[in-house]
Image (tube, helix red, strand yellow):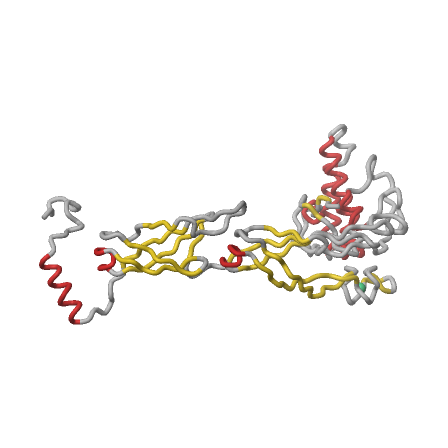
Length: 345
Ligand SMILES: [Zn+2]
């Protein structure tokens, strides 16, 4: 179950490394400002007051603060949050908050990471998600790089990911002798490499997602494992650029091939093909090879385009130079005719 992550540091307006008295000062200032007695009937102030009290409950208690910090600093306030496997099994002592909370208890997020409520006001025994009822593992995400040919044809690929399994030192509880387990840092699980064979369907695309059922994080108390989502990334290809189902290959041709026309061989996604260059072809001109593009999801294929690039020899031979000189004398072709005012020929 995902809950909204709460950034307790942000709520109190303190840095993550703030000292205990900085936290206390920040809390007192905010508590005075948002206290229900000062803001009668103000629902927003009431919510805010609850938030800062919850934040203070956690950050003022070294044990709870340490546990909260284990979640890492990369979470954003309000983001969808699912606790790591093994989470919620550590006994945390709860202070009695007395009458601070007029109505309602802690947030779902608080209960998810500490497994307690105000009314429980006691260690996390016998309560909380995942204690005895089967709990489904988290879904996991991974990215996989494949070639354009693989995306076109599909195929089987093997990837190695970081999986997790219950920590053998603490048996997944995250604690040994009442302290955070040194092996897993209190998380209750350790990372292990995991190798998976992935079947890539034909007609995959950049950003396509493959779902592998039950290959995510393991469940708890015989709960089923979560799913694994693999996002495909296509490696840059030497010959082709991709646009939807279509491919474009830029193909170099000589000036004489462009002028006289020619039949040349070009690469395709499945090998090669003969292409006829029409006489008088221009640089940048695109020729279409119908149905030679990428496989489409529903069958059929896109097109391939051949984009002509006229290339001249950088080190012409004496004979070539002589012939180009003769051509230059004989030719009346002026591609810049009328291009610059007053310089027409
Ligand atoms: Zn452990």
